[in-house]
Length: 155
Image (cartoon, rainbow, N blue to C red):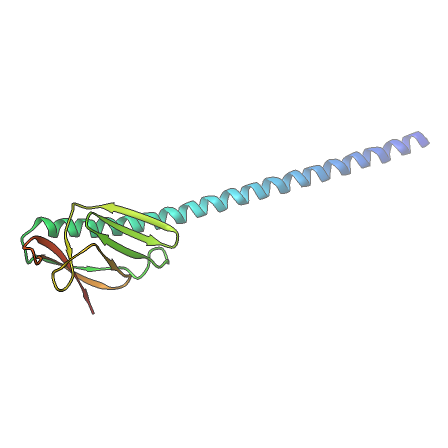
């Protein structure tokens, strides 16, 4: 009979080890699923941010290309959103590209080559546009009588 008791104790010990192993395995699976879902949610947020940024770049690019293709004096008003996916951003316009910068991300849209001018109609290399601001895009002649784009900040 003593032999039977020892056998029962050994069985209980084996069962306890199996439960511990099962609990440990369950915890590993739960943490794996949580990290997977976290990465999925981060990907969704990044995709939303990228879509909003790309849409804004496309809007600005098409406005500039439209103005550039029409006669001098043509104007178009542009209002920038306050944020992109709850993030601050900045837009840099250059002669052949539009750059959107937000935190450590950058998006670029290529445009037809344009001449940018300041309020004195002098050619400039780039200009910055800021969130929540309104701008008037206008096709003008620069000081050398070349078609150019003047971007006026509206208050």
